[in-house]
Image 1: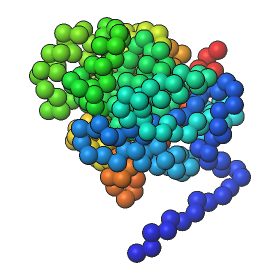
Image 2: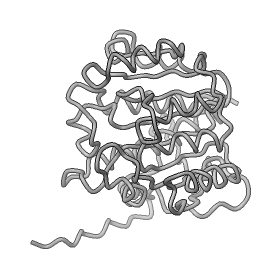
Image 3: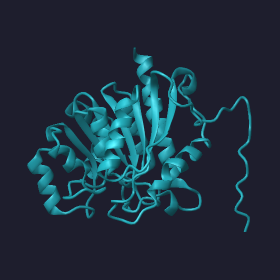
Image 4: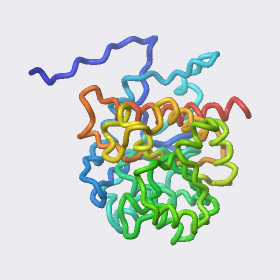
Length: 297
C-alpha cells in the first residue's frame, strides 16, 4: 500500500491557511503548540496533535466568504510561536505560563495536547473568566486532563465567572455535578444548548464570564461521528457546525483573550482525519471571529 500523500495543488489565486511566521512584535493572533499528554486519564497520542493540526490547516484557505469575502491573512497579523517543550508536570506548566505570558497577542490560540493545558494557559493569560465547551466538568481531584477547572478555582479563579457548555449525560458523575453546583458554576448542558440555540447560549456565557475570558475548546464535546479521534467523545454530542458556531461567536467578542483546542489524539483519528480537520477549522473560526472584531470597530 502506498502511504505517500499526494502533494497539495498550487494556485496563486487560492492561498492556503497556515505556515504563519514566528512572532515579531505585536500580532493579532499567535498560535502556540502545547503538546501535553502524560497525565491524561485515557491513553493518548495528543502530543502529536499540534503538528497534525498545522498540517491540516494547509487543506483550507484563509478566506471567510462573507459577503464580502475576506482573506484573514490580509486583515490580521497571525504568527506561530512553535511548541512549548515538555509541557507536562509542574515544571512544564511553569514553562507554559512563561511562554504564554511573554507573547504579545490580541488572541492566543493554544493547540493541545490534552485538557490539562487549560490550567497553565489560562493562568499565563491572566484570565479572570472561563468558558468551557466540554462534555465533562473537569473538576476531578489531582492533576490531570480531568482536573484543570478545579485547579483554577483552587488557585483563585472565581467560579461565578465560569460557564460550562455541553455537559453531557452519562459522561459525568453525580458527585462532580454536585461539586459544580456547590462552586456556583453556570452549567449549560447539551439539551439546553439545543433548546436555546448557540447564539443565545454564547451571549449568556460571555456576560457571565466577564472580562479577560479564556475559551477551552474540548473537541470531545462533539458527537463521536465527527470527533472519533477524541478518546472521550460519545454519540449524541454537538455537531461540528454547532461547535464551530460557538467558537466563532466567542472569538468575535473582545473580552476573549485566549483559547485552547484540546483532547484530540491525532494518532487515533480515522483515515480521513476528520477530527484533526475539525480542530484546524476551529483555529480558522477563532481567526474569523477575531477578524469580525475589526469590522465592528
